[in-house]
Amino acid sequence: MLSGAQVGAYLQNGFLTVENVVPMPLIEEARQAVEDFVERSRAVADHDDVFDLEPGHSADTPRVRRLKEPCAIHPIFDRINRLPQLLDIAEALIGPEIRYQGSKLNMKAAEYGAPVEWHQDFAFYPHTNDDLLAVGVCLDDCTLENGCMLMIPGSHRWPILDHHQDGVFVGAIDVEREGVDTSKAVPITVNAGGISLHHCRMLHAVAITGSAAPRGLFLLQVAAVGAGPILGVSDMAQFAGWVLRGHPTRHFRVKEMDIRVPLPKHERQGSIYEIQTKFRPKLFAVPRSG
Image 1 (cartoon, rainbow, N blue to C red):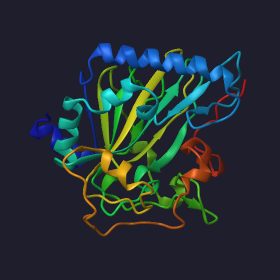
Image 2: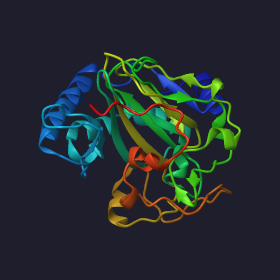
Image 3: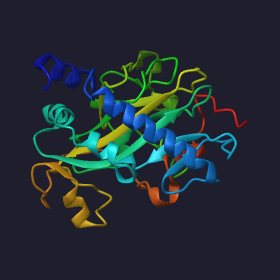
Image 4: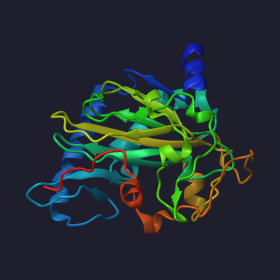
């Protein structure tokens, strides 16, 4: 459970790190699962329901930048997702009733790694309120050198900024147009087995890495049960089954929120990496293709 000081720091900054949350045997099991999936990716030539691939991916040189919905494709990730100590921490920040919303495993292998431009998660999945957060479980030490997240303290109190260009959702903001001073960003460094937590409004990014050290970050998106998705629910039985603590509901708390249209259409636009390919001007270099 978090201390009062830790909760206060989260409320002030919009993010928090907590070391030594996930036992190392589980981290090592998750690392092995990742290695097995990377090996399987040699047989994959393009993005699919499991793999999001780096430019230059091949059977000889597999380059996976994301595993999609790891909780659905390997039991170790769902075990971590349901750890009581992890849910206790989330409960201290968004309340006692918690719903799983989604998961992804972002990977930056040694010597390459795709950047992620500045964005707020809420723009991708608007809800009736903002009691949502992302929990990043570090499979490796996350350092500035190997591509840890960058966050701007206090930006979780800002409006939802415009993630569109020319009427298209591009999943990133133009920091000059929005008047954002990125020099105030801080690196979110955490050791393997530790976690980061950030509010759904938090403005954050990831720079490209050329480090020799890999970085695997297992990201869980969780919401208060009383936060309803604006994009709708396609399977109510599954939606109810995603409740990790508390009870399912069809009554959601509504808060005045900033929601910009057109709304994202993930089934056509793909992952954030693909969505951001249309964004200009890019602040971070693109990875090498070979």
